[in-house]
Every structure is written in structure tokens, then in C-alpha cells.
Image 1 (spheres, rainbow, N blue to C red):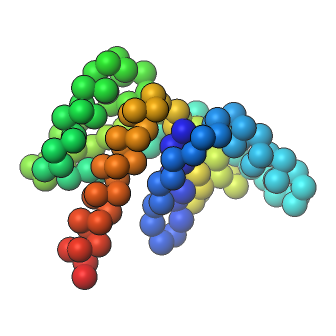
Image 2 (cartoon, one colour; image 1 turned 90 degrees about the vertical axis):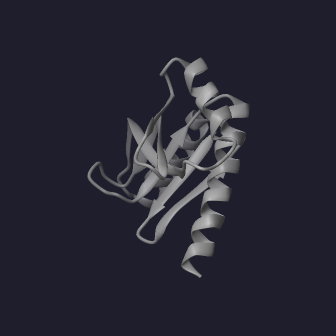
Image 3 (cartoon, rainbow, N blue to C red; image 1 turned 45 degrees about the vertical axis):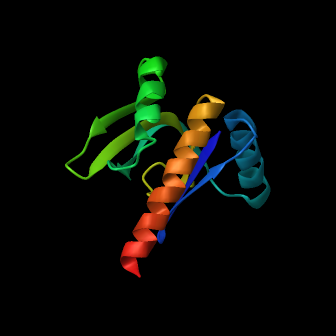
Length: 129
């Protein structure tokens, strides 16, 4: 499973072995114990990857094999490709931009997204420095 954590300072991606259902159940239990509201709903999240990444072709093949169920891709502009994932949004309330997005894909697709994400973050960090 892929876990995207959205905060006011950015987005982090982790690849976890736990299921989305187990993660959602843990979040509900935590919210109940601390008396906090929680919103869990089906959702979609998108992120950009640089179009020059060589392994992007493998991700395009995986997206086609998925037949649009969980992952889709399209050209954003000359420099980036937009990757859209279907999954589950978990947050304190429905209208917040901070929370957790969970997506379950094939293990190879998850690994590839993780690898491409790391490369793109490293490239972005290099540009900022």
C-alpha cells in the first residue's frame, strides 16, 4: 500500500505492508481514544512526475494493464506527467487539505511509484539547493 501524508509543509510518500483497511481501522481507533473526529472516504489523488524519467514507460504499461481502475496517467505539460490514483482519504474533517491518502496497487506498481517519487524528490531538492 502507498501512504501519502499531506501536511502544510509538503507531501511524503511511504510504501507500507499494512492494508488500507487496517490503517483506516487504526485511525478510527485513535480518533475514538482521543475524542477527535475522523473522515474516511473514497477519493482520488494526483501528483506530478518529471516526464524525462526513463522508468516512466514501465509505469505507463502498468497503468494500461490496470485498465483505469486504480491508476491513470496523462501528460500535464512538456515537463511533467500527472499520475492519478484512486484510494481512501483519511483526515480530521472532509474539507481539509491535510491528511492521509492510501492507495493499494500491485506490488510492482507500488515499488515503481516509490522509486520514481524518490528520484523526482531528489531532482527537486537538487534544483532548490
